[in-house]
Image 1 (tube, rainbow over the protein chains, first blue to last red):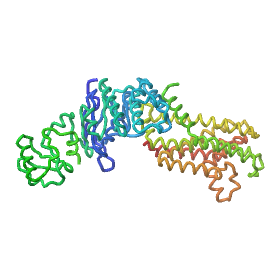
Image 2 (image 1 turned 90 degrees about the vertical axis):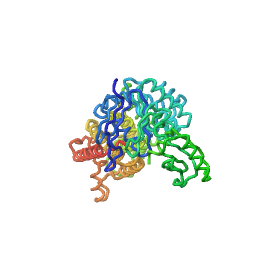
Image 3 (image 1 turned 135 degrees about the vertical axis):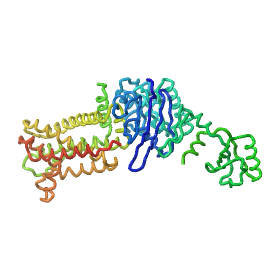
Length: 297
Length: 241
């Protein structure tokens, strides 16, 4: 297929008078991993569930694999895998039963045993869902999402509740999917997760897209000088060469100017004069976390 | 046998059989009522107690599966997002509902076999000519109480569904003419009780097994009215998530 795997154009969704998602547009190239970042209530799940065909847009259009998720739902569902933000699986069903059940739904079904091995639940196949740990439950949900050998996968907070080992396993599965040309859209509020997995990151805040780009682009754009110091400094005493100094969050500051060696020296001189111990000084780039905290109220 | 519908119905069946508390309501309680009230003469009916009781217990066991067991499990499935994920999968909502109906039907067939076997062993002597009518009544009754169960499961929280379904089930035993004739209750209670869908279900079934017209009777007409009202309300109000 030639076009993007996922297309979102002017998508708006309201609940009552409140716009949960407001005029959202982005594309995801076929075979890419796209991470939708945002705080709780930013509109991530609303967006994903519209792409999955659970909700109709109030305005705008969404297409997945070129198909309308509602009007062409049956065709799309055969080629799409999804993992809800939580649950979705019978409490009393055994892991293997659930995987076999979902495999029976698809024309291009994966092998249930291979799926269980893939997500590391080989030893838990006879364990009921309610007796699996939180991380194991998420891995079972991931196996279910892959039951139809999908072309596109939606993962809503896939690693929530996973221990670091399970998280790394999930990352590897996402990378393997990407290597096979599967398009993945995942939501997360873990910035390192987006950084580790995504080709493209979109940051949602109050239903609006406030940043879009590759992790490298997002971190490189807009440098400035960042430093750590005790909270609530009087920024007014800072030298004019540092421009506007703001406390981005408690104890973390941004001097909103282009970073130069002279300005870093100015900062250090000012700090010494004020008796301020700088915890760190970083220039030229920022972490995704810095960006996120600057953009998101 | 590995199609989506068969797989889904098969899993629904297995999960139901695994729930011990469900077997208590669907099988143990009806059979105990049948055994106890047929052997201990508390009714003082002119006809043999077993002939009075069996239609009531058949109806009660149908209700136990449709309104109690499946309403409660559907309520929890809904709150855990199971209905949402299955509805969004290629199985789809239509086949999910069909699979549940299939599973209900198979369980109720098993229940009928158990109740009828015990009743015959206790001397039940129905008019077998009424069997086709009885089957029609059972199917309509099952649909009616599945409607009621889904009305609860689709609108209330899972815990509330559990409480309400169990409470209704308990109230139906004395007030629905299941083990005690409605006619012998105080007039005011009897007048209200006669309007209940459970009373209509039991009464229509009793007529069928007595060899009287059942499908063309006032109780069956009332049951059908309840059925349409409950199924329509369930369809209109059901929330999938």
